[in-house]
Amino acid sequence: AQSVTQLDSQVPVFEEAPVELRCNYSSSVSVYLFWYVQYPNQGLQLLLKYLSGSTLVKGINGFEAEFNKSQTSFHLRKPSVHISDTAEYFCAVSEPLDGQNFVFGPGTRLSVLP
Amino acid sequence: NAGVMQNPRHLVRRRGQEARLRCSPMKGHSHVYWYRQLPEEGLKFMVYLQKENIIDESGMPKERFSAEFPKEGPSILRIQQVVRGDSAAYFCASSPGSSRNTIYFGEGSWLTVV
Image (cartoon, rainbow over all chains, first blue to last red; front, side, top):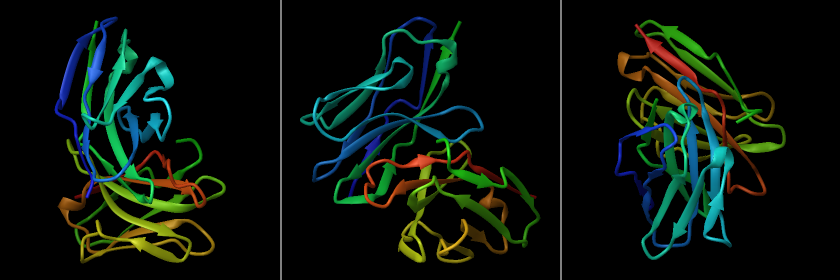
């Protein structure tokens, strides 16, 4: 069964600093990987996804993530954050042949400080 | 998440009442997922449905909770005899039938049991 770990429950960072939000997964088969962002009192928006091909995936709002199969990781990065990036970030995994079940990590709360 | 419509956005129920949450998937999507997010917790999968068919309800509580996705109309998540512990945000997501590798979320329904 799949599982997703997001080691950092909260990440405070100053505006314009770089940030990395960590995500590790466990699965015995190949996977699809996703990052979603949730702003307060809103639903989840898709930031980016890895399905196949290039392991470096670029998403919206200047975010990118890199799939590392050997380390079973899919860390999210942004070189320079804005106040508006303050939100909850969720990593998710699904298996291509079992695409109905998306498993989400517990989330990381990113707080961008002025 | 544009296109997945959930209503009501906010619902207040007294203990013992019934709560009905509705979800209309994005146009052209025939797969619906329901997730629950408890305060300060991540997303927990509840149920996955296609039209007129429950595919996976492994995340649904055994009692009081039910879901349907009729041939016509929205998907309904029904909670009977609500208790305070049911207070949470309930998110619906949808995906296309032919390509299930990404799911798109609605804005959520916030249930408060008083």
